[in-house]
Image 1 (cartoon, helix red, strand yellow):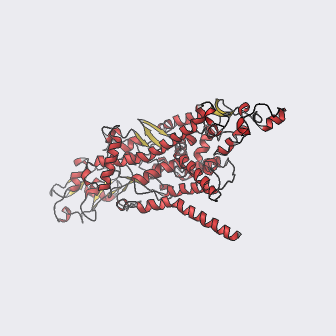
Image 2 (cartoon, chains in turn red, brown):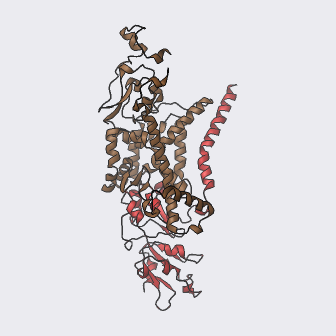
Image 3 (tube, chains in turn brown, yellow):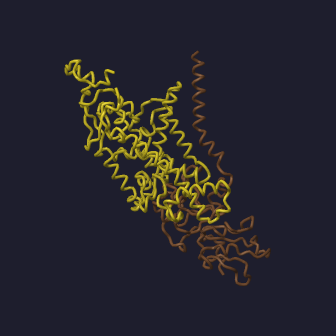
Length: 208
Length: 340
């Protein structure tokens, strides 16, 4: 009899525990497919900190309190979070430029309660610098004319322009702050333009 | 006895007011991410490209917000964020624990952040753990969870009623600060329920579903249910520890009036934090939630301005023990509820 009582109570508790977990499981199942988990991972392409972030990533993580205000004010909702990562990155914001890029509006720097994001002029922002793969970009391999990256750039010809001899071959210039809009808009399936850290050697080649 | 015979006392209804406050805060935390999504849609200028569901959402939010905001992109930015850190009509207000954790993690003082937590910190000096009882969005869910525990009790599943050491939460605070400094992350953001609740609601509504914080929060709910009633707040919450310390010498306190008390213990049963109002045992853990005031049948509890609690003032004068000790005859006037 006692064993049966124990069994009944156990089953009831198990049922209650499962019911308690239901909201989480249901939310994961119901999450829209379009907003799936981020493709880019740390250290990979197009994986950026929000504009005005501290250059030293460890210092940025030390300063960030994970409040999420930067994302809440972001008009294009480009700021995402390491919501399901553990360790030091937990709840730290990032931008996956390939999915949705920063428009350099500056609202996140304004709302940040800590010094993780400092109010910075849009030309002084340093999220990285764009790099073009000349072996894949359509105009560079003479597979047509494009110029999407040049026309979307919010900073104009300080950041990206056309090579002088060939009007349709894009060239990244020093003024690029790495917002990633060119990455988002690039029509090439392999995205032959991406954001790297400023000072990474290969970018220097692009100077005209 | 007819309850309407008792005179109206505002303090007995403060608990309802508190529930209104908790519900409002929670509703805001649900509404703000929805507003953020709506603002994204507005900023995109592409109503026609939205799906049917998104258009319906857009229309709903437009109907809700248009009386308050002529320009959604700018005007709706007035209130942003969570109770952990947010912006309220131009003022940045944050949780004192966020500043403390950030100072521990980064080792530097960032004055704007410290300034933003000044109002809650000073308010806690005067009002004690009022945040826990009146604002905390996690408290809202924990109290509902307590109600669930009562229901479970009714169908034969006894919730846990263990007693741990209350000082455990100060250890959590100290260890959390130490670990923040050692690892260089603001650890409390991940283990402080109000921060977790606010953030996870945002993740769930505006981004791609709940994060791991939701698992942590469900675990705390189960802890409350299986181990101790309101156990997380009482024994493990780092923010609760900080607010308790700040509110140790708070000026607004609940005190018992022995001449009106009949020792019925209803206050002790009502107190979710397991304090002992009937024997004047409030202490720094009391969050001024007024549940005991609302439960008191003889209005023997009220707010006083004092920087210390009373020591035990003896049994209530309407109770049996006082009559016995002082030789008051059985026929003397007593609380009629007791004889009912």
